[in-house]
Image (cartoon, rainbow over all chains, first blue to last red; front, side):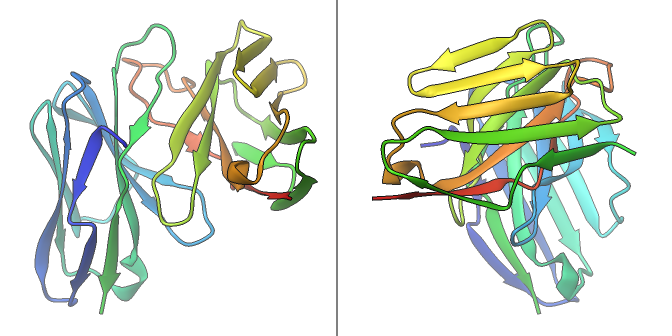
Length: 115
Length: 116
């Protein structure tokens, strides 16, 4: 089982709703990530937090708002989403250090459906 | 622009044979390359990482090669089993520099089917 825990596993929300996806890891990793994956497509990077600071935003629309309350937690706040935002949202973490490569460990994902 | 190509969308292999998956990239100078396995409806699971100064890595029935001149990685599963059926993703990282936490860029994946 993955050591990156994501909740909820499934979320259905209306276009006017505000909801949040949550992610937690207890591996002592200092980098955390949000990826988006559509059916039959590879995961696409959305955000990277390094030492609790946002270091990469891949031009993600502002209706997605990430938050890193501490080194173990990562949230993705959702507001005014569109049906095309329906996808599997994957949280991941890594040691975040420069040396030795950067193995990224993924959670099981949160399935989001926007209606 | 950066491009990662995995040899085919689907690959059918008979049980017991060696499955070989290919990952080619262009306009990219990765510090490392990783292979992941993804089952339907689940997050990717890390399999192997190989750095730019390494030629080959092995783990049990898995072997990865990395040729930075050809800009290619090969992923082998020996003595394949039906349980190896999944989508295998190639991912590149380390090109953006910075603190090391730069995420990964994934190829589209190869759906491997091992037939009994």
